[in-house]
Length: 612
Image (cartoon, rainbow, N blue to C red; front, side, top):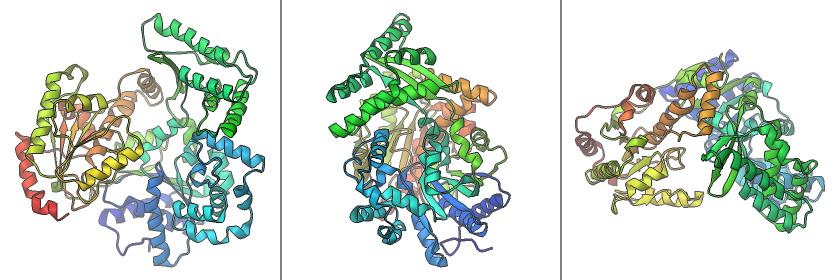
């Protein structure tokens, strides 16, 4: 059959992927796909899903963990519409706040925005919401939606209508909807969202892009915390509106529990009883959560603030009241600040969407081992497919340095000096940009002490997104530079270093999570649910995946060539190596610096570099 594919011919692996997805949909079965960079998984999944959906009167949702990933989907759909003269209706939906044109509330952050928006609409004080119900004002907006949510937002601002309401109305007639994970994985908003756009999942195919993020994203929507700092800021909000609500007793309760459970035992964190804490924290105020929410909305209206700590406390108390054994209740203290945290251990309730859909397409470049995701996502009948990288293995040289270990007991001055010397030696003897990724900012800082002036760009823990983007932009424009970053951070995942801007990646250590009560709780819970696989699923595999993600930044096209050094002997240990080998081909070398120099001369010479 002819698939709806925007290019003249699919690549080899891409063609297989399209057919495999289509076959799974014919069987009404979900499919889990590991598709390395370069296969073209976005176009493949859209081609198969859309072809089948239009033949069988179904809808398609394409979900991403980040808004920035919507643009490539838009380009694919525009290409299909043009090539096949389809006039396919699609919408690009982002969070309500990102489409809000009301300057009285669109600056407010987080959940406080949604409550403020709701209050304005109920009071009939949002002219943009009212205007969005006038159909004649929406007639000319559809063409702008075809360019994505940014162009659509600008037109809605010009016309004076609520971008979110206009998008939701258009979605009712759309066959293809681009949205975010939060629309489906946040159990507090999913039902409302689907009802508003007039769609049901039984008649929908869901494409989950970067699907290795599903579990962590779903859990994040179900976490809440409250600290003595939060209480202090909330008390200031109450004072600002002259409220009679008194929450000062909550600080006393938190300090009393902290003294009993932490100070007397000389520890920094412990589990606390959710039932006892809830009763104590709500004992002095009737309907305390509702009272705090009302006060929060009054404060936001009068102060013009971006956020409300009162609302954070209200939501924490709501979750604390309803929390069960799928959460860990952890008390911790850092300095003088005491913190109560509710941590989701496994987001079973948030994964309902997966079972309600006609079928799911889960895809990522790091979906191995496939059996793990099949279990964690609860899709036992799903088909699994693994595709080889379309790029030549000769384009990448990957070697393990067995002379280094960043295990805790090995983190000495001499070890940091050795790592710094090795990185300096690699930079001195090669040509082109290099990035060294570290398991933590602490290790990065300790190695950097012995680097002299050799590091040109450094990611810092306090960096905000604009600063990171500026750092990234400067690095991409440079030549023969060395940049330090952290594994699992904004420089090592989800970033496309195009045009072979990186010639070498050094991964120092294994980014294993620091052992604490949260990690221990998750491992124990997954052990119970998945037959003793907690350490593997929660601790070991995610760490290797973070390293693989970082290693993949260098090779983004069939022309890119780069070397990767895994600087920790544990990468050759059985349990780590068995996971790693599914993603990366490891080369052996007696002297890996000589191997790098030879690889550099062959592939990354100055003539090649200057032509990029």
